[in-house]
Length: 417
Ligand SMILES: Cc1ncc(COP(=O)(O)O)c(C=O)c1O
Image (tube, rainbow, N blue to C red; front, side, top):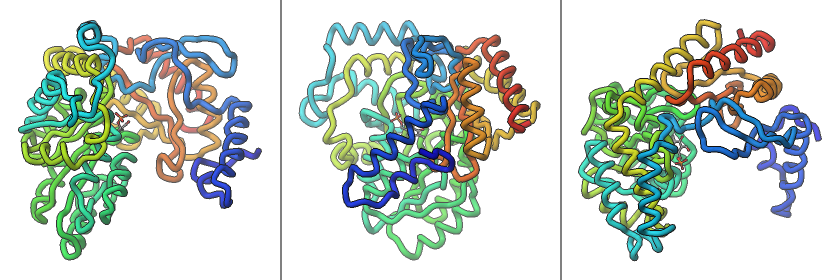
């Protein structure tokens, strides 16, 4: 099968009366990419998601070590001794699972404790936890926004936000990425047409690593009587002097209507949360269907997350190390001449812009021992295909030096610098 120019959207659009028909050409397409050593998804790890990972290389069948520039475990908390110990103790005391959905017997004291700690961290009255960041956005948005309302999204919002908007059955509109003037235009139009208005942005954008311009957005949102929801997936633990996220970064704590996020990135576990007023959180406990109809987080995971919140608030050295790594790596890549877009956090895109070049280049990066994900259209806009790097506090200087050496070499070879 010819792989050039094909992507996931291509296979979704193949017409056929048999719903399985698209699966065979897609399977063959992926087999071909694997044969060409261009298939880097689902790399299988045999170690924790730390700065150095061990993987089974599908091209050689051998286990090998790689430098991990692809994990959202920003502070290394997945294996932090306090986080692991708290999980083990809870495992021994409570066993493997919560046993039920929160409403019907699955709410443990541990869940309430985590919710209260997250509410305090986010400066909100209360919080509700979900079993993933994805189900958080889907449940929160579809639970709150009704058919007569409108959800207004930054064009680069995460897929889980878009899915929440779709599931709500409400209309949704988009504004240009991180552009207050564009938001103002969309809000003015929506004001005439709809009842409630929810503006939704990522605190830190998951493919671009830039930060939402909240200080400019907020007055516009207030002017139109809209509400603001931010997704702090990549900001919690990373931004702000105490790791409390984007509002702390800007000095806007207590001013955001809904602060959502994941527990799977800097917090090192799995799950998600919404922090807001007591009434909003209470409402979501009954109307967010992904909360209502899904078994609560396992107690051991919950206990680890409580410990992770504590570590984030107590151990500032970890965040300082992360920021040292971010500054060093970003400055050096920019000095070499790479196009990093507006990157300003632990997510650093290297924009390549064309699919074939990205395929070839990411194969070389893989072979040199760097675990970095290529991201193609439609996951990012057309001609914005990229290597998506994410950094951890636990990466050593020697890891970063080696990564820069490799990236400089391939960058020159493929005309990126
Ligand atoms: C901005 C954003 N929101 C939500 C999610 C979903 O979170 P989770 O992986 O915890 O389901 C992700 C990434 O996975 C994300 O990048």
